[in-house]
Image (cartoon, rainbow, N blue to C red; front, side, top):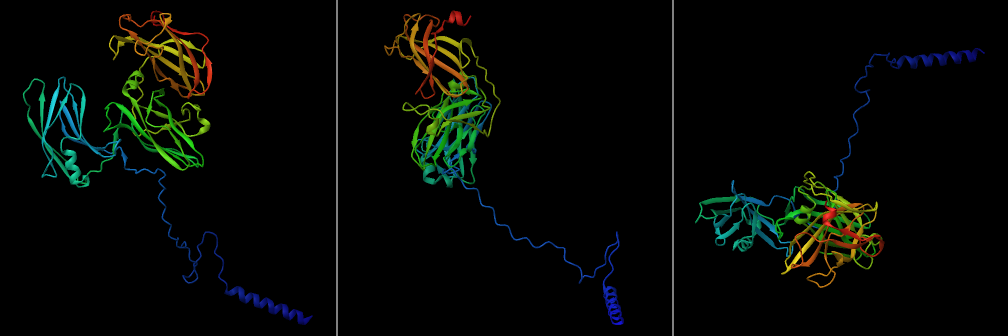
Length: 472
């Protein structure tokens, strides 16, 4: 017993000695004083250097600078009466470089613009005198001025640094106006590209509309292209790539501006083999913008066919497809002002209204045109085509004074799902029988799929246009 007591006392003494060497705990609110050697390091560990982020892969196999909205206009003269620009661009049909003089006459009278003494880089004389005659309040262009294109090619566009010339403006009735020196510089040289600018206040730049394992669709640019033959139309270029293992159709089936269906002219439609691509060029004329009363582009949608399942044309023509909203780099404010007309027919799915009926001059001798403009609303979730048959004029079978058949011209008869727009019907009438106003015109109307391969229904009664009744 005594032995166990001695062992317990020894253990107690040992524990007491250990406790006297330990630092006392810090009290609440009191910082603990640690010597530097005893303090633990609180610095964060060094971060490993981050790997540089990879550049996003360019999925459009077209040079990003080839279609460019960059400013390629160099102003030679800007006065109250005239603006004259020098433009470097490319020809979309050949791919070769082009040079334009573009003159805007702001006067109420015709102007003649003489351009002479052209120097490149301060010393190379290029071409002889060029002349533009510009009617009042209009724009005119000259393509590839005499000698200038060749001189620029010889020098090399990347080596061009300066352009100078003497301009002479002559008003109608004057012998010769004053001479005006002008010059512009381009320190980094020139790279000719397919250049474009806003059309009616709207412009769309390079963008991907769809990209998945099946297809890639991209818009390369849309606006008014400088080298275009017409100064007043909208043009765009689409790139479509088939990424699948099966052939697909590739077509632009429809176009809407500010929610209005406009007729679109497409240069090519393709049947794309697997793992191939194509370019589609499309245009819309100024007359179609004017008919719809569109002075300013606020929105743009494209109906693009890229799947056999969506093709509503079958064996006739490729049509149908999905709608894609296009992001506009520059946009205006929708100002659609055209009238929707007087109601002719409405069954809840299709609405027809008469906007105008007029007698106009024809390009054929001894022939007049009767032109009927209809406003069409398609409320279906399918695209439609309008098929006109059995035409009658003043309740007699119609015969074209030109074709000697019942054929008559039809503009814009295809409408995408839930869309609306204008259809123009033009008859050729003998001049000796045509009156001062459009005659009574009637027809049977059939609704087909957008590509025309199937019939939805035929209207139960003839559509009759009598300007005296319908416009009253």
